[in-house]
Image 1: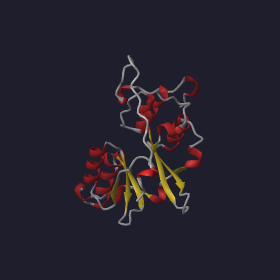
Image 2: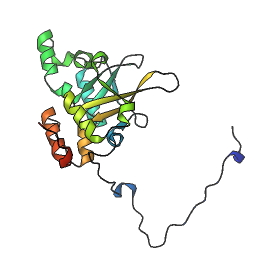
Image 3: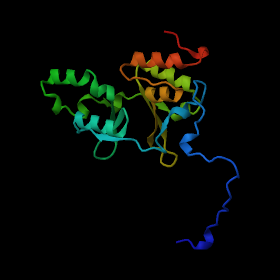
Image 4: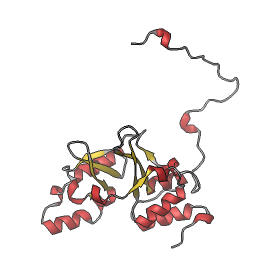
Length: 206
């Protein structure tokens, strides 16, 4: 254990006389624009814990977890904590459970996450090397082209070279950062709302 000599005492200062002191959340940051760096709207998984669920969990359990955590995407992991897929609120609330139940003649409460998730082999990812050079508008264009409301960002671990998850982009989160509330009722609606909020110089053509 280090001795006290290894550390230093910080120098405290008096508050400026007459200057108001605000709570941190009262200081409103500058609103994001389409020309800002994409990293401003990425959920950075090196700083934020990602919410995950087991492949064998029921879709009801997954939906409850989403609601409790306030997220619309869950990573799906196996017993070795390896990512095997992802599942979104749209998957859980859309046609996938209905179609699976009908096709396999099973009740809805027996449907598991692994039955309707997007498996790892079908997940399209963005390399962090591209994201660091991208703008918010680039991400909106990319999401729109893929027809998805989320994008996953990956990078190589600097030490061992393993492929790791680094971030997630969400159309809903981007809308919030742009100053609009997106009702996640459909992909087309989401992107119409995003496009309406962009600067006229970067409005996307339909």
